[in-house]
Each structure stands twice: as C-alpha cells, then as structure tokens.
Length: 112
Length: 113
Image (tube, rainbow over all chains, first blue to last red; front, side):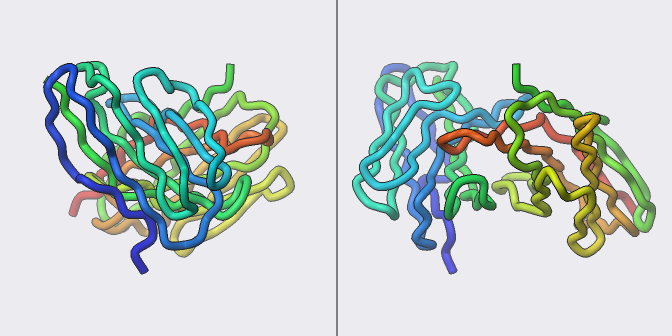
C-alpha cells in the first residue's frame, strides 16, 4: 500500500542547476498535482494532470515543467533553480474530479 | 479572489480538552470543503469532505461543520490527545474543469500534557 511516493525527501541545489522531483502513485488515479508549501501560506498549485498525456498550469507554474507519459508517474522538473524555489514540494493524486486527494510525504528543496 | 482564511493561526490546549478551529472562504464556484491534518514533516491527510448540502460530518473525534450561506466551516476536536498536535488545513475545491483546490494557511495545534 505505497500510495503516493515522492523522491528525494531532501535536496540542496545550487542556483542555475536543474533537477527532477519524482512522483509515483499505485492507486490508478487519473488526477495528479504538484504543490509547493511555503511558511505561513497555503499550498499553491504548480501544475496538474487529468490523465496520461494531459497537463495544465496551476497558480505558480513559472520555472517548472511537467509531463505525464504514464498514469503512475508525474515528474516535476526545475529548469534552472532559483533561491525563490526553496520550498517543500508535495505531489498529490485523486481518483476523479473533486474526490479525496492523497499526498506524498514531500520533498524539501533548498536552492543556494 | 478565491481565498480561504483560518483562525486562529496557532493554539495550545491541554490534553483531554476540546477545541474548535475556524475557516472562512470566498471561493466560487464551490464544490466541496475539506479538512486535512498535516503532521510535521509529512503530507496532508484527509479528515473530512463536505459538499454544499452537508452541514456536518464526523470522523472519530473530529467533527466538521459547514454553513454554505455564510461560507464558514469549523473543525471541532473532542477529548484531544497528544497525537492531535499538527497543522489543520481547510481546503475548498472549485467546481471547475481541472483539479483546483484553494488551501488555507492552516491552524497549528499543540496539545500538551
């Protein structure tokens, strides 16, 4: 019963470096999303997907790319890391529109 | 602008006591309202989901209420336990194409013995 699995749990990047945050779910959910959580603020939607091959931008998409080649995986790519991207990133999946969302354990990213 | 406001920001209570957390929202079009519990260093975990027509829902010692007319919700925790120490997040789902959730900043609850 893995649910939503995120890797890595912690990462430190230098400004300008690129990396991919991994997210996988084993519940056959169509919907997957990426959020960032910053101190004193609610989670904000970065990108989301409503099915394999379909992605769309959320509230704060700049500096991030996503793809959804399979139902299970939804990686988030940072193209050129900036200190403003220091945050905790959560991946979530849900079965359908407006159904319960299941979250991964998060990736704490620091950009120096 | 779609917003979810929670109060208080933080709260300390003694083990065994009850408490109530508040959530006000200005989100349209509304689909449902959720309460999540987030332990330190973990992802949020769903406690309740309520649609427009539901005004109360319970999950063990957690009871959520919803007043869709005044756009207010509350989460009542009964007989608190040390393990209830966490951030409680109110989330409103938009009735739109896509997966749009609007998150409150959360209420940090600390239960002490």
